[in-house]
Length: 484
Image (cartoon, rainbow, N blue to C red; front, side, top):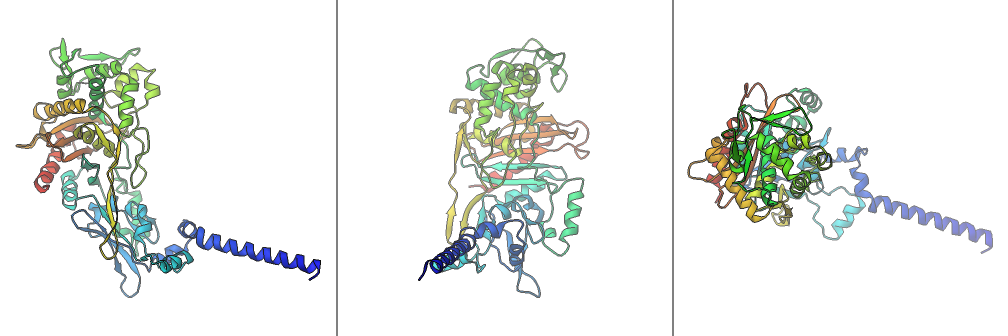
């Protein structure tokens, strides 16, 4: 073979190798990425004929399943529990794509019978190509109780197992029926939901942030006790209004009078009655950094590990360190302090769990088409927000709120309940109502956050103790009656 022919042959061989490597790269290495790229319409076409795995509750209720489309060999999703689980389960739609659990667990819920090279290789290696199934931590009975307890209110409920971090219920209202988004009228229904002024598509439990109001006093009090700055018996001045440093503004109590006798009060009484004057002064005394350290251990100002992205709960440590007036306002859960109901349930859970913060999780396990477990979740510790001693002190203070203070509507006969109420002005101009708590105090099995968005349904006035606490009581009563 002469030189020119040899060079041509070498070039052709190199070109063939490049083509072979390119095909291997795109068909094997990048197959899943390209298949799942939102710009690729082919997966949507193939998904129409595919069966997806089950999503079931911890007590065995089917939350999502695939059903055969009449007159075809294809499948579409069915959501037997409808609006009760809409924000948790989400939807899988040919037009809209996937949402919530249907999105975060799509890779295991979908069948892998795609006849791609990667799936053929997986089949040759003995991999089961059938869709997997997902079991969530939520108890369907408790979810229904929480949904019903919110009634006509806009708002959210998050219930956690304080020991493990498992989500026992997660409700957002108003809600929607996911099956509206998988049928022939999907586009029209989607447009109607988008333009609904009640915003039913919004997951208020995990995707919206609110001023926590006086429920945040739990964090301020815990930080004060944990750092040794105050004890429940610590004495404070008792003015009718607290003058914010370097400002003409003042902070008063909800009832317009002093916390106690107008001379002195103590931390326990101020917490029980939810005295703004005391806690504005205490937040300034404690300082922005120590409070920031506590909320940081609770998962604030950072991304929480969860099935989907949770908005960051906000405590502006750096800004508040140089602005004492803003620090006083933030100490009562107002100004720029923001959190989701999930974050607030984690505060109650941390106190209940001896100060240890557990990562919230929604999926208990995955199991295959034959019912065999494939994967399960191991509870994860995020950190420690307070000492066990401080947590025990806060438990007793929160119990006093329910027995003698603003949270009496959250009490249950024969059960020791701990809680904290809150009332905060929302960005919508309405007053939002909160209750966080846990029970039984001696051995907690449930931690809860209830948020009710202010609206005409709540009427004028009101408070977290009047509106949110009774909702918590209904849910706790149901759980304690059904749990072992």
